[in-house]
Structure formats: structure tokens, C-alpha cells
Amino acid sequence: MTQLRVALVGSGSMGLNHARTIAAGPDTELAFVVDPSEENGLPVAQEYGARWVSGLDQIGDVDAAVIAASTEHHYDLALPIIKARLPLLIEKPVCPSLAQSDEVVTASREAGTVLMCGLLERFNPAVVVAMKMMEQPLYIRAERHSPYAARIRTGVAWDLLVHDVDLVVRAFGGDHPERAEMQVGHFHPDSVTGAEDVVEASLRFASGGIASVSASRLGQRKVRSMVIQEIDRLIEVDLLRRGVTSYRHSSVAGDPGRDGFRQMTEMEVPEVIGAEPLASQLAHFVGLVRGEHDPDLERDSILPAHRVVDQVLATRG
Image (cartoon, rainbow, N blue to C red; front, side, top):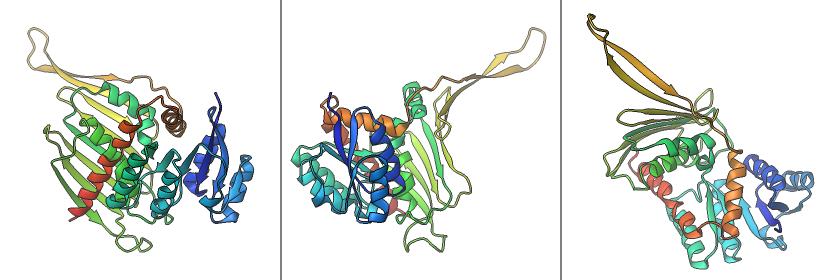
């Protein structure tokens, strides 16, 4: 089957990862690297045998586009690509506001084009395994902490929190939470005015399930963890090391003639096998473009997490 010719928009930190993945993909060819900076874009294009151009109007014949530019530029980049009826994979968040994100999703729906958001943790093999193991989650605790990165202009709600909110919403069946509360902290002197450095969010769903989601860019080490509690089981997910551990605790009657009970915790460590999440995400995007997956379902799955982040930000304490 013919490879998809892909235009990559943005050659920064995340763009470099996308360039590598697109160039190495069995079903994709990196055709263009779009970046207004020749200093940034040209070396990436040359490394992978692509052509560097400074703007969208210079893109030649391509089958799809990937936007990996800074979030503040997504809106102005996405709409022309959709208008050109190109399938689009856009890094999360779609835009730095719910209103703009909604407009981009609506434009894609009206144009009938493929739109996918880079909510990468959906393709983390450990997350995939944990989601399959879950039966009836009652409480989920997720933490996403990182060292400070001055290049990120948005706050941690749109940069980090959105990933785990997306996983939590999916774990609770895609329902929008009935209630959302948040505490925020603005601490770092280099942060853009109004951009939060720490977020602690609490969500309650109609099913009765609750979630606590924590995001910080003041950490001195990377933390990517999720704990899912059910009535008689706890599932612990290490998203960095891509590991899953299941725990069941039980009390067993003591031996005859002896008082008390004996307690026991059973541990299960399932084997986690899977490709690099970015490669799996790209493969899913290719499947969408080729009609192997439902583009309407994919498009409809984008905004729930964006709506929750917007709601959470509106309740900041």
C-alpha cells in the first residue's frame, strides 16, 4: 500500500519526535517540514530527506498533516489545513481555549475531514493494559509532575493535566463530571502571567466515582502515575516505566486453636508489551486516514477532556 505523504508543521522539541516517527513509519513518508525558522526547520528536513518550507502555502502534494507547533499557534494553523481538506493530527491541546478547540473540531466535522488530537497516553501500553483490566473503578488518583520547562507558555492545566483528565474521563465511561473543583498555584518567576505552575483537581462523576488529578512543573523529577481503586482491587500504573501491578488484600481465618486472622496481599504483574506510544498513535492516525477506524468517534473523543479542563480552570481557587 502506498505510503502517506505527511507535512509536519513545527520542528521544535515535540516536532523532532514526530519527524523521527513519521520518517521511520512503514506507512508514512515525511514530505515537508513547515517552520518559519530556517535555522530550526531545515536541519530536520535534511536529516529525514524532506523539504523545508516556511509556510503552509508552500506545501506541495501531501496526504495528511501533523501540527506540532507551540499551542498558541494551533488555531491559526489548523483551520487552513482543514479548509484544504487534509487529514490532521494535532498535538494536545487542540487550542489553548475550549472555544477555539470547539471551533476547530466543528470545522473538521463540517468539512468531513479526519481530525485526531495527540492525547498520547491513550497509546501507552501500560494504560492500554490497565484499561482492559478495570472492571468498576471507584476512585482514581493521577499525578503528572515535571521539572520546569520555560519553553511551555501555557499553564500546566492545558499542558499536563489534560492527559490524565482524558484517561479519567475514559475510565468512567466518557461521562462529563458532575462537579469539578481545583486549587492552583502560580509560583515560578519565569512563568507567563496567569499560567499556573501547579494544579490539584477533584472530579465527581454521576456514577459516584471520584478522581483526584495532580499536575506540577515544579517537580525535580518526572512522575507519571495512576492508581485505580475498585472494591476489592487496586491497579497501579507507572506510565513512565510502562508497568502495571494489581493488588488484592484479604484476611484469612487463623489456624485452629489460635486467635486472630492472617492477612495476605496478592500481587499480579501482567506482561506489558507494545510499541512506542508515538508510533502507535501515528499508526492509528494512518488507519483513520485509510478508513480503518471511525473518524466520527475519534473526533467526538477529543473535546470531553478539553471541556473538563475548561470547567476546572473556571473553578480555580
